Amino acid sequence: MSEAGLPEIARWVAAAGPLDITVLTGAGISTESGIPDFRGPRGLWTTDPSSQRLFDYDAYVNDPQVRRAAWQLRRVHPAWTAEPNAGHRAVAALEESGRLRAVITQNIDGLHQRAGNCPEHVLEIHGSLHAVECLRCARRAPTADVLARLEAGEEDPNCAACGGTLKVATISFGQALRSDVLDAAIDAATGCALFLALGTSLTVQPAASLVALAARSGARLVIMNAEPTPYDDLADAVVRGPIGEGLPQIVPSPPAGRDPGRDRWRPSRQSAG
Ligand code: NAD
Image (cartoon, rainbow, N blue to C red; front, side, top):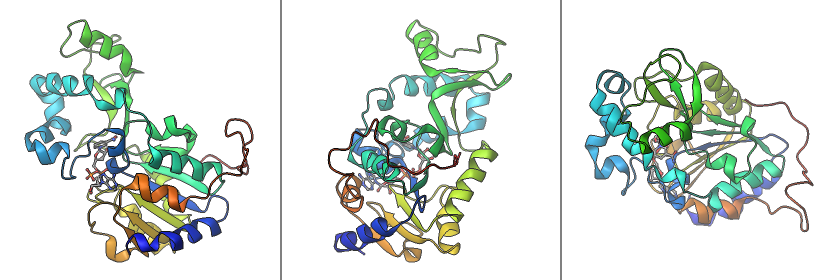
């Protein structure tokens, strides 16, 4: 389905009941905030395939050169200055409307929370750039603390408590997902009536398989992505345009005069996370 399907998708969204909608997002929802994706035409790996090694867990653990390069990449990550865009704000508006069960995100940039989604409803299945953890003692700290050490000249900072290897709290290739977060994502995928997959190539597992899980569990499936995905045939609607243009058109506007900070019209709910 093309742009012509947006009014119909908007009707599906409007007809959804409380907590009926689960959203899965990928790097494509943040490109309009200036954060490149991996596999799109201007993606990090499309333009520099050798950078993939910096996201490999074994390489990171065993090769100090990889760690030094990875920290330099983190130091200048565009997420530190990026602002949420119209797509993130539309996902936050879905939560404001009471229809959102959870946002499952593959992104590590924290922009859904910045746009107004409650942190406990954002399932960061690939972790977060905003925290670091020690691979030996599991102590966590804000990434900002380590960035300050990098600015002061350290190249491969170690854990201040035990001297172990530090890594941003993101899931690298070869690293296990957190089972509690994955379980919550599976619940959100199987328990929804409408599943929106936004800005993801749907090539990273197990995240991509949540789409099939939702469809098999009876959810209506909408895929919004600039390029084809392996799951397009399964979808009830496929939208190709930019998310920042398409998504706001399918999310109902909040009631006029409502103060989003105080006058919440979300029903009470249990945490999805
Ligand atoms: P991906 O790079 O594999 O795919 C992104 C998809 O989004 C591409 O198919 C691209 O065509 C599409 N796209 C880009 N901009 C778009 C737009 N404005 N509108 C519609 N579609 C658009 O990304 P993925 O599927 O999320 O998987 C890759 C991994 O990359 C994830 O594990 C994620 O953790 C990581 N990642 C995250 C960020 C971030 O946090 N912002 C950035 C880069 C990579």
